[in-house]
Image (cartoon, rainbow, N blue to C red):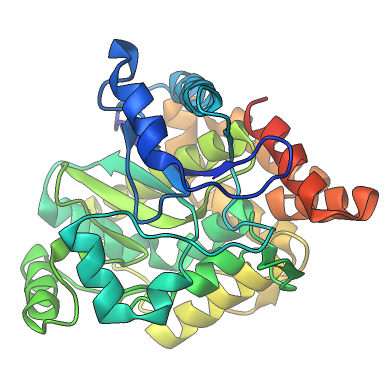
Length: 362
């Protein structure tokens, strides 16, 4: 059974005003004194962010429980210095992010200028184990068309600097400002993948391999494929769903490779359109079907994803739970829809943030 790990980035906010707070160093210092949190929390590019990493898990119920536990531990440590955490992929309230100290982050700030000053976005990255780089690249080649559906399911960033963007995942649009971000062509082999990465680093435009921000990549630290398209999800159950579906995609792609089935050779241009449509619509409108690249209802496209990976989900015992969670999202709405409902009810973005704090820790 393939193991799965999740990295989540959380927004540090004032518990009453909802204002983002640049207190990550203080939260990390508190967490470092707690033996139970060793290796769980890490600093990120901005002082308003806190990242945690789960352990690799084979059982999705265990992974979901760990995501809940890590969120609550993050809130506990943040509470000790007068703030809290919200699983928001962008801040609804206006914010001027501050860059974390360190030579790497300073290089990025100098290299990319205003793009760094406007990059306070928070994601969810899913690592799924693979047996080799060759298998991993075969997986990357075959999951490309389906990643826009994962993005739609996770959509949780409708607001930017105090305004409704009319997108459901505006985070993903901001993320595209990085020069190495986005979908990739079919590589065909691990040799070609590593050659492309080496050429990109050698260009000097990016600092190192850690700045390969493909939608999905081989991890440089772990024997995993890392899928990076999701917003940080408002609810822990949605994060667990994203991880479950991602493992299903990886396992299905590996089986296709073993059986000699070639990947769909959609152009990067079409994949960008699918990603844009997912960012714009979330689950509230039509998406591009990953096979045909034509517009269909969100319900039918999510159904196509479940059908595509149904065998892998059934074999891991995750099919029914995945179906049920997808149905709940389609009926109840993504995090973006919840945020808009909170604004409609309270007519105040502060209440959107504080309401999302409660959802984060539920």
